[in-house]
Image 1 (tube, rainbow, N blue to C red):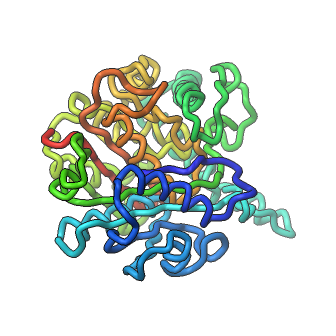
Image 2 (tube, rainbow, N blue to C red):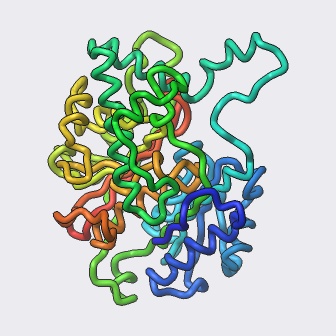
Length: 388
């Protein structure tokens, strides 16, 4: 696999980022570009920074006139690209496939907040339609459901951000590499209460990719320690959350559906005991906290205690965002899913350097959430040691 340096890459184009990630992946796979049979490209803001179709990727990497399929599925676009490549190899359609995610968001001016209008009415009403506004409502619904006191909840989500910044400081490919304190996070200006500045991930530029093949071909290429795909699951909202009274706004229904399918596919019956580490979609700190319950690693209503007990810290039972997560990498949308898988891949192979988990990780889970709490798509990918 390969991953470019994430950040404000003003002097690099999307093609430069793509080449940076691809060269690392090619060297890792020890193949020639001519051996790749098909490719999938995950991009979200295609018309303003990458361009339509698969042609931009084929041109940047000089792919040998193979089929290149561009996919877009909100923030799960990178995981969708991975799914296409894995299914192509698993079906026998090709021997070797490429999954790619790239995004240049800094050039677009996109900041994730509503653009000011010429009047005050929409500005006052539209603020609740922003991403921070939607996820702040998730926090309120979660707190109300479990009767969690306001200051306790604020400390829990602050711990999520402090933990990710501690981890990101050790990662040379992260956008933000500066530690923050609990006081800084708790006292930061509000974006949408209870979410402060440090509870929100930023936008960034980045690229990540995976070259996928069968275990037999990998061994023929000289690979001895293999990371295999254990499960791929995607769940998409069908309107249920919005069209009835069954959903209370405190969790992600699609994540629960995707997690159940992924665990069944991977043969995982107790994720809290069997998962070695996780990369989850921490667009906001509250998203990570709630996702712990949706993935079944915390009991319903128990994530606040687990977070404050350090279960998900780098030296905890199941590290989450051991690479720094979206909080420190930012969120170049098409690249995020593959960046998460990349970290699990490195950790399982023992290549994560200063941030390497010492207990030989077996299973790594990555989770993407695209859209808003009430209408979204979730992807869960589990990779692990061959034979596990």
